[in-house]
Each structure stands twice: as structure tokens, then as C-alpha cells.
Image (cartoon, rainbow, N blue to C red; front, side):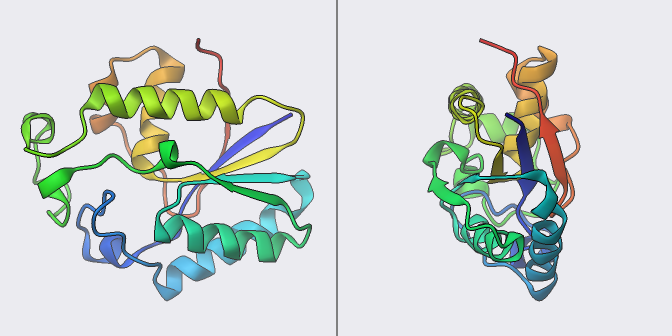
Length: 176
């Protein structure tokens, strides 16, 4: 069984270069829809039988377009644990104008530890089984995966580069 990850296609928030988080829930742009279609065509040959997606609009749209372009009718599941970090009141703020201190101290945001714990659990569950699986999620989820894979502190996800929209990566889940 192989586990793959793809970041959703470009959204309206990505185009405006603002944090989407969970609250803006921006849809895909035309470019984002095209990115998802290209991913689906590329994934046709990987034998993916299951897609597990964040339930946010941008990932639902990406998942539907990928599945349609793969053409093999994969099982599609949604997992709330794969949602992007909830930035609280910082949603809609321009990229990189927010410090880690602001991110961790803003009222009504999700703690970094809670975010890491839910990403870890979701990816561990996704890695179980015998069916090649695609996870459709968000940049923050992927960078938190990198901290888990490499044994880095949870808050270091903030300084790691997000994958590009529509970028596919094979995941190795080997932590407990």
C-alpha cells in the first residue's frame, strides 16, 4: 500500500495571498480546477483506490475533479482531522505578515499541539490498509507531516515551505 498526498488546487484566497484556514473556505479558481484535473490524469496509473479528503470546499472540489479524471471510481471519504490549521481571527490576513507568536496567541485559534495531534492521527489511520490511498488536504497539514516525519518540534511547521497547489508527494508514515 502506498500513501500519496496532494495539496488542493489554487483557491481565491491563494490568489489574493491571504490565509484561508478553516474560516474563509474559499473555492477553487479556474487555475485550481485545471491543477486538480492534471493531478487526476497523472494519478491514473498509480492504482489509487481510495481518496481521503479534508471536508473544506477547496478540497472537496479538488477531490471531485481528481476522481473524475482518474476514471477508476475510487472510494471517497472525508476526515475533519485533515482540515487546515484554524487560524481563528487571522484568517484573511496576508501571508507572512503573521508571526508564530501571533499565530499561537490569537484568540479563538487552534493550538499548534492540537493541530499536530489531529494531523498525526489522521495520517496514521490513512496509512493503514492495503489500498493505495490519496490524501487531499492543505499546505499546513503537509508541513506538519514533515515535522512528524523528521522529528521536529510542532511549531516548526510554520517555517517550512508549503507544497505547491496540486503538488503530489508520496508519504512515509513511520512515527507512533
